[in-house]
Length: 421
Image 1 (spheres, rainbow, N blue to C red):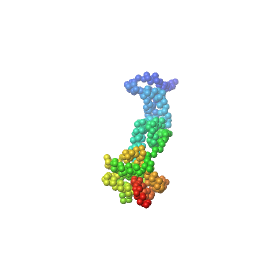
Image 2 (cartoon, one colour):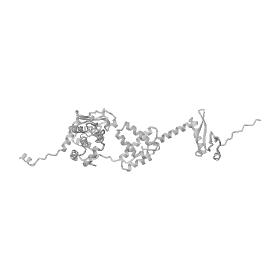
Image 3 (cartoon, helix red, strand yellow):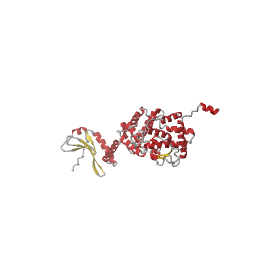
Image 4 (tube, one colour):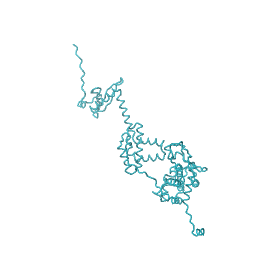
């Protein structure tokens, strides 16, 4: 009678057995179950491996090193790998994809993502000066505390603690801007698939009270004009302050003024669209701003031409003539005249608005002179909008400033008596 073959009776490994395995001259295997085995090297190191078959091909999946990966952990890893194989997924390929994903997460730190966002915005949205300022405050307030962290690891609580540092300084308007920038950075990261939530979305902080520029009362305007006319500092700065009063331009538009913008024959100044505040919104090179120049402005420009006519900028810097005067050049000299915390260069526009509105000029004409968009729903912007009306306003305004500096005529009493006798 033919005897039955012996059944294969292999028992799974135990921790005691694993510890007892000694190294040999060549690597050898000790099987556990369901394709899991322990590979023992001649140097005594032991590694878990899983033998599997997928798409008709036999492969080996590396699970980890014993004892860092214990017996129960190895079996759990085998179970997870078997689940993937059953779904038609190669566990080795899945691990490579996961490594790549984790590498991407940890390599995309807040600093790297923020700088990519900043570069994109600088190319498409911001003026160069704005881009520099935004980068400077980001490097001061955000990057030292968040820069090395992966964007996916930054929680709302972590971001809140960083922004609270700005709140404690009392810089509430800056806090609002920095929170908004963080929101945009994380929005950018989500779009690139680097994180799933925006931690800035739910954060709320106290709002800053709207701060207005210091401005003198209209009754003090004659004294301001006389102080400017009697100023004994840099003559280019003096002319710059006098001229900004006559043009009602913003400081950035004014100090970058170039000779090529001026048409002496037509008595106009044309500010290019990319120098205007609304450039960020419209990006339309046709949206220039034309400023009618009264005779008083033409006179100042002719005087400046004798000083800086050889340079590109009307207000060329005395230190670097290829550049214009600095952002605070006019303001600091105004402070020297005694107007610190009382008046600013930007407030010249408020004086212009107050005088012209008091006179009763059309509000749309005044707003147009101040380069405020009158109505975004109107048809294509006309670069000569209200030009004849604004020319009359600017002439009246310049004459009004002249009259305010004139001393009142003092009539002797004997002249009065002669007239009445």
